[in-house]
Length: 265
Image (cartoon, rainbow, N blue to C red; front, side, top):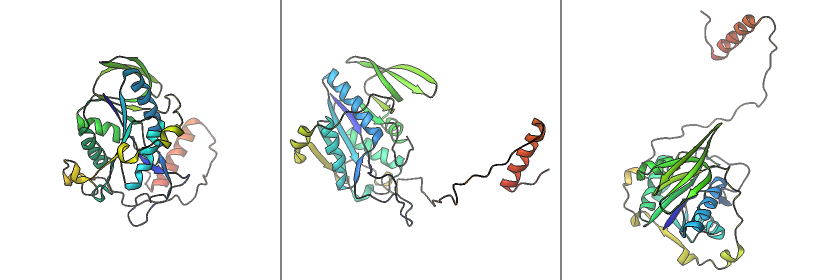
């Protein structure tokens, strides 16, 4: 059976640039796999070894996103699928999850879909759960450890802040893997040297998928970034409060009112 790992291409830089016209991230010349997706890949590879499955990486992006699929194959994935079409551009998390879910549904014999907890550029953490919703799959988020693994189900250990939860899921299901999971493995040079791009990386365009054109790209994205503002200064003002607790509380309330431009009644 197959374990599917959606991955994202993110800028390979310490800083990201914003396009002032579109308010979208500018494409960087160099890219890499989203670091959280590497934890998802590691968990998928561990599971595949125990269950005798294959790991397939899938991504949506421009043609050069095949670089991150090559990285995934270098880590141990058997192949990669690239969803690439100009019609997919400008997608928000909902349109992205929809497009990925349609691509995933074209793959047969799926046991699990494993997603990183979030993207390091947008930090929304929405795509994984949205894919589960689109495909009507049970899901477990923020998985930190895989417990009992069988051919019919698995037990996962979730870390939700200070709360630990163990859950058992039957297949097929979707997991989002937290960065508390095992450290991801390095790429293997031998796998990269033997990479057959034509056979191991498949590209699907809009014409290859049964998509609703109103649910992809910009037209399928209900959320729009209208404006991005940078803070004027990183300096913080401090003010010492003296007196009783009641007097300090009144002083804090007054400062909040002044900051928000409210009148004191």
